[in-house]
Length: 504
Ligand SMILES: [Zn+2]
Image (cartoon, rainbow, N blue to C red; front, side, top):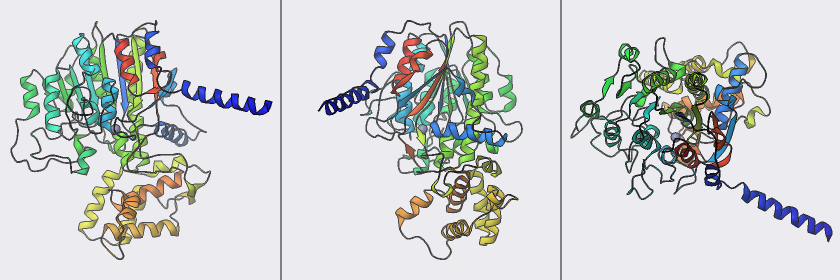
């Protein structure tokens, strides 16, 4: 009886502890905060950036340097590390618009909605707009298009993320001091709703033939006082004191984005370059708010492309290092917050076929991103290339059958590639079942995705989805006010913390 009673006590205590850790204590923490407050705030958001993306990168960096375990990313040396939930108001697994709105306004909203409530009626004022109104300088940097969901969530108020044109018009209206990175999707409108265009949902849609063109939103922005910069030369000429700049990368990849880190050429500007330039433009006595998005971690993870995602995380971390350098000049006044909007791909560091083995170094053998390899496949398709010719291209891009035994393709893997070739090149027996087809290949070329999966699996990496997941996301923070980011809370707490700290 006594034992039963103590068991009951333990159970009740556990239940109590469970509730105590529910993410509902953010307000209390903010109310009791008495520490120093920052003047300069950096808000780094990795799109599709979960704990596995972070740890896979650290394992990869250690492996390529022939050392054990992990090599820490700069962001993971921050003294404060917390965790938060990401669910949207109408869906447990969130999307970039709802997550971006949560991170920019402290409010949950519905999937696809930018800076408005779930019913798409009421706009929410964002922390960037509040910072602007309080006299802080404001900057928005992204490696994807500047009117993509995450950056848009800081300045736009639109019922749908697919309204690229309307979002880009909101950009000029914002009067923020600096925008930099990718280009503009549909600056003259798209003549139709993007709702049914799946590719547009991840920002990959190209500009289609436009019926009923609208006034170019960049031209509109110029009328509102902005200078548009779109060459490397003009970018390097931007200096401190310059204002109202929209800096678009000279070289743009699909979806108006910066080229992937893995595909970048000598002289290409990186997310770090844009972050550094933003700091130069924004620095002033009153203070600033700078949001930097590593947007293509998400894209690489939608494509289940491990090493491309890892290189994007490295690019993101290099941008964070620019903020860390600034922090060291102004340690008492600088807060750096690094987070993600959600995880993408269900990436995990283990796979049934590789048992307990990991071999992250193998990933280094991949030459180009899945996106670049897709373009190569298109050319091969035009020539109606044989399986052997395609296999040769696969071996070259993904580093199969090198000198090491671990890179050799097994009979099973070759059969998977043959099946993928049949699907992609419309040869032999096809998979009739749509569900089966989607689970194998998603919306990606069957050959690319199969090769990418085989390489990941050989490295000991598994992917579970072509979409997002709902796993909690880590936040790292450093500087005055950073202790507020310690604990387990909700994504809406992050901007609420910043708002309180900047007295917005
Ligand atoms: Zn996202």
